Image 1 (cartoon, rainbow, N blue to C red):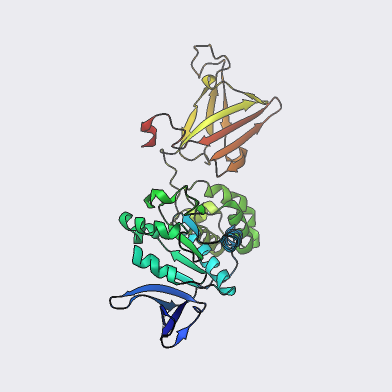
Image 2: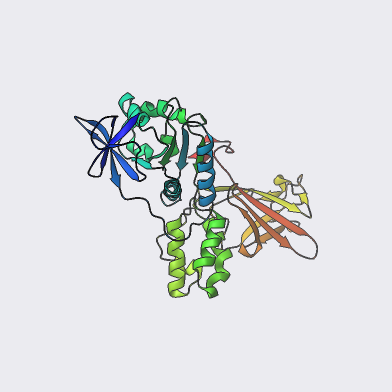
Length: 364
């Protein structure tokens, strides 16, 4: 049986019979160190502490991950991917905090330990534990990542929940992706979701500014990734100066990056009938579809006509922000509806991804 020798705030896994033996690792948060003579050891550090309300899907994700960890026999791996401020660390902290309530310690790996000696050390900790590899791709070089694959495989009989956070999933070993035997869950953070934004704004915006929540949600779609730091700063600035979102963002260090590299394909329907793409112009737009400026589309009713789009027989449709009815942030679809006495026109802009691009030049 593995026991633990306590030396000040450091615990050493050791065989039964040593001095000051602990038969269980006390609940707490530890980092792993390496002594040249004695080997690996655990050192107590300050526990994670989360204060205030937790927004969005984080509590649901934490409950599900912990439930699966308890239900599964050995190791369970979780990969959390996304830029700083997107919620990865918050989820890891919440899981650690909830696990501690049930007597499960957390071990943080912030050095590139790997290989048989390190794997054996983790195996020697025979109690259930949360093991967090923070900023995994920065701490572990590609050759070091290979060394912990066996640890993640669940080959060892000890029960561990391995949580890996990364800012760049493409720098994580390819043998970890699409391998549920090693990494059971993979959560990719593309910024905070609309549920999070609405809930946070309702709780933190002044009452007279809550009329702008819909506009805030629309503005967040202008960003490839909109993180919590941006939202917090925007709400703070609006409250301080009683400003609209556009006014607050004017000099705030939170600028959208939808430039000409962001391409949207256009689809038009009139009274439920799709308009032939050959009869309208432009068929795609670049930049930000949420704009204060009107977007103009020229329609040529006859697809066989050789008329230019500015011919008197043709007509145009003007679209502006007031016509925006729906945003789907996951698929990148913006839906505009223009209604008049004669017809209902629906225009959708669908963000083009690398998978849908037909020319390699478009991906540059």
